[in-house]
Length: 114
Image: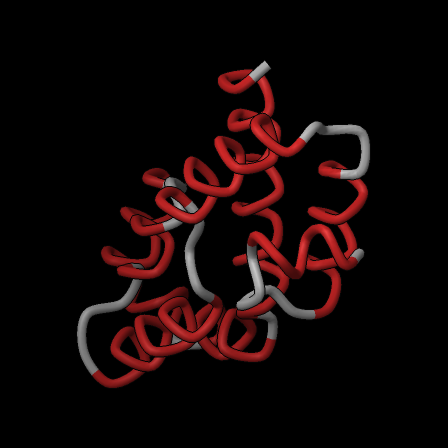
């Protein structure tokens, strides 16, 4: 885990554990390339939370567009965040939404650097 902290110190919790496991078999050069690609593409959970709040008080579904779920974003936009219930659920689960997106990005980044 110390390796991951050297390259991506901003990660926390489940995301840090997952990325640590992904990086454990990488050499230093590959780990550095992976960290650069991953950092450029990952979404910060705080950004997801802020855009969820924007959806609650303004335009719903922005956070879904940011994490690449265009269909859900359109659905939230047209239904007012599924009558605000979906937006409330997403505000509670914002870390999980970000982690799912970032996990997929990590898989893509591994395939790019190896």
